[in-house]
View 1 (cartoon, one colour):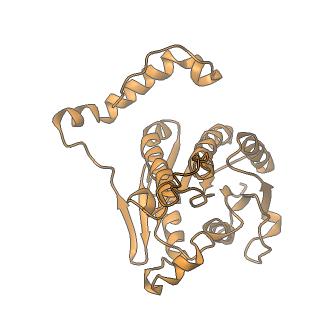
View 2 (tube, helix red, strand yellow; view 1 turned 135 degrees about the vertical axis):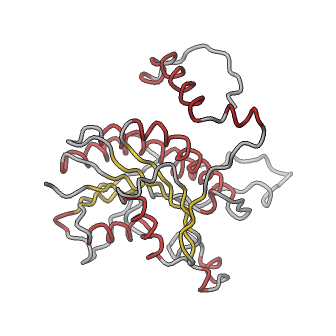
View 3 (tube, one colour; view 1 turned 120 degrees about the vertical axis):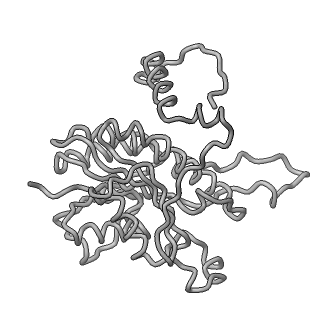
Length: 289
């Protein structure tokens, strides 16, 4: 039996590189995706890794990435969708009433959210072609996806979106033989947080990389069968955060998984050509929740 294959985006630094090393030492084969080549390290067997240059914000790049990754070993078992960047725009602190507003840089949304959606869709396709269809999807979110972050509103918005995506996809993923979960680390010493910010933090506030790897291990573990989970990662430990529940009676009724499962099945059937081919249909929009 061949070794399991993990595809990791943002694999050349930070959490992605740490996960590549961690899984490699456990016998996995690793597809490392990044816009920059990974550093040479003795922790990753060069015969058991494949680097693919890819910009996750590009659909075409990700298609090429997943095609290449699957053909490498004819299997995919894990997608760790980890690539992410911080804010690239500001609203309130740079108002200049004497100049016209500039179009904002929305790259964080393209990488942190759209890129994750691309990755989930492509992994679902290619992992379904494996000898044992299905697999595990773990998205690197953040505690910024659970709480407000006035310092990084773009980042927080994308990570809130990722958390919502994971929770909303879990039911459909399960029915197709997949699991989808999110790791939500607190501040980790990587290249992402700005240096001045890191200097303001006490050492005991920083989450060790080993703790982040514990979260990934729990979500990979077949015995635990986690699905739709968001796991906060702090120095003190791991904290599983349940989705907020509706308060009102009608909200509780409408929020039932069975209701939404039925609604989604009807939606897919009604709009099958739109979903499969991207063709546009005329329809009236209305609130769905």
